[in-house]
Length: 619
Image (tube, rainbow, N blue to C red):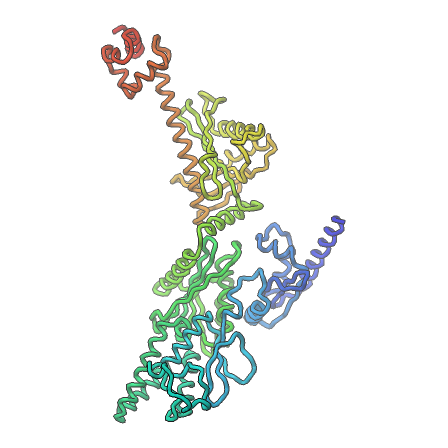
């Protein structure tokens, strides 16, 4: 039964591969679906045949995410388009519709609200989740619901429009004006003297704000204010002035309004330990108008360029109001040109998308990344940071799971004597000092050999585990050997003697004695310098292993030195040797002391023997 199931799975995979190879070399979008028909991944390609067929080739070259996704694919569908930028638009639309689990996703539709303006004599604004073909006017989508609600209330307050529950013309003159009128937040359109024409004029001004035409609106209102002043209607001019000031202040206080007013967006993206974040700096006339950040999740295998392509498409394509310039931190396969072409058609004006290389714009790009990093790190817990580091290390070393226990070994010696070794144990990212072990090399006294010493240590360690010694159980998920490929090979030979399958890696140092890479016994180097979290962890393990070995070596060497100087002196046993060391402190002090001084510590015959031992003659 199991064999038949395996055969059916293989046939299905072959059928998928054959179907992918039959695709044309045309641009389009592909949808991967599981057995239930649910879309699990949406992608675009310049040449569908080349891209889709890659999924069903040798899986050894795939990332863990891709292997997992392909293992769940039951069938796929394709949609052909006429150009690559049309594929970009369609891909984004399908991602928003299906929310595939293997795509990088921003918030769902509830996170991107629209502002709706009803169609009536006294129209009112409201916030809705989706656009509808109901004759009303829609603006957006905007950012988060809370920010959009705050921004809409602020715009209405700036133009002194009602936000209460009264309905016009039904409630005009029915009651006294509410508290908003007395607080100066509303001009009291429930009063009979306020006209529908003035109400709708203010509504049109709000629409200009929501369409990103705030500068045009301010010019018009300023001209109106000056005209009122010239006509000596100073009270009306002052009222317009107050509204102008309120609208001008909005762009610097409201993220949503700042985004609408911005002529330049600067993107920063950051992958932290556990959380990712993007930040957008909205600039207007060279001045920072606002900042927008959002946390998101992405597989470890996703590059910064891949994340950025997914995020920017989802962010900009639904929007009607777009900046004139978008600065990205990195480029990928001509993506900037494609995005610029799509957004230019949507915006009705030229939208530049590019990656700044130097100067002030590059500095702004770096500032955006720092903002993203700050938000991601603040939101990341210690547990998430630890789990992320171990997960990343496990994927770099191609382990089946993140390592929970790691053991590291180092050899320390001085010439031909006092050869010792250390075994340091890490549980996750923390040292487990109760499991540390120290070894004195027994088989190579007077004959230093780091490789043979490493083999002796690992052999003794594995033998103790084989004998059931709980102090050496359980076996770790990884052995880390201080040294290069030869040291790793020496350890591998011992592991094979015991039939142990624990992965072994050598820790390769640079000229500053820092671990720059891990190396397999086969000689494959795995660079760790470019990942700060893993680099710091491996460096910490290497330093701790070296420290523990050196400490033991110093203790051993000191004992050996003391032993060789005072051993074999007639009449001087362990007790008297201890008394001499305690009193004089060092061998040199004992050697320089005369017989009288020595006799104050040990009997005179023993003192004379000590003198003779160091000076070769009777005192």
